[in-house]
Image 1 (tube, rainbow, N blue to C red):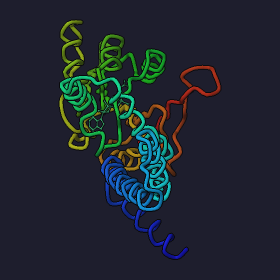
Image 2: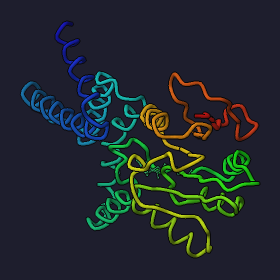
Image 3: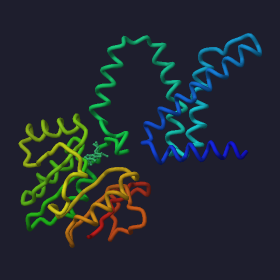
Image 4: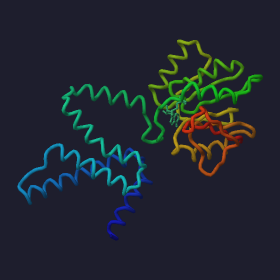
Length: 267
Ligand SMILES: C[S@@+](CC[C@H](N)C(=O)[O-])C[C@H]1O[C@@H](n2cnc3c(N)ncnc32)[C@H](O)[C@@H]1O
């Protein structure tokens, strides 16, 4: 029991030291070692080997259990469980190797530093853009920044609807950034798209900062905003709150009960 608690402590310590994707990689490796151990044992005891599908199921179960001990977020348990099974299915299809390389390059360009930032790409929708626009004064020029602007939909919309304002997006992943630049050029949008890490941007230059990131990014974002943003400026977050910092107000972007909110803090 004590030993089990020790392993649990070590694994949850690892959770604090490594980004989740790196920890997940090591968990799959350890699970692979456990599967090899279990197969050897089965061979010695019964003189038989497990069926191939059984090995993959076992890999998923071991990895998922280890992710519970390591206190990884709930969705990682499912990812660990189904990842080996997905490999098994893909192996049955016997796809040529270049398809995997292509899929890897595409995923890398789309998600880039997600393993570090824990903020994947997923776009907000026009229904949210319209609510954000209502927070931007129409009678004067303000500077608006979307940190993590993805494919630039929100920034181009705001640039079109708020012609007096300067609307800027900064994006770290190369593929969404490139798409935003191309779309902006094609649509002749006045939106400005910068490539880079918002952590390196001085937020004091902006009156309104919009973020659609992830729960993991919010504490650091608040720390940065509180240090840099000017009094009276607005920090807007779609869907994710800042733990322990109540917003000045929040807006529901749709009427249904499970719709996400837009949270607004005034610095
Ligand atoms: C959930 S998407 C939101 C996209 C866009 N703002 C929208 O509303 O459609 C978050 C984006 O933030 C980007 N991102 C994450 N961390 C970042 C960072 N440190 N600097 C710049 N972009 C970042 C991700 O690559 C991703 O495209």
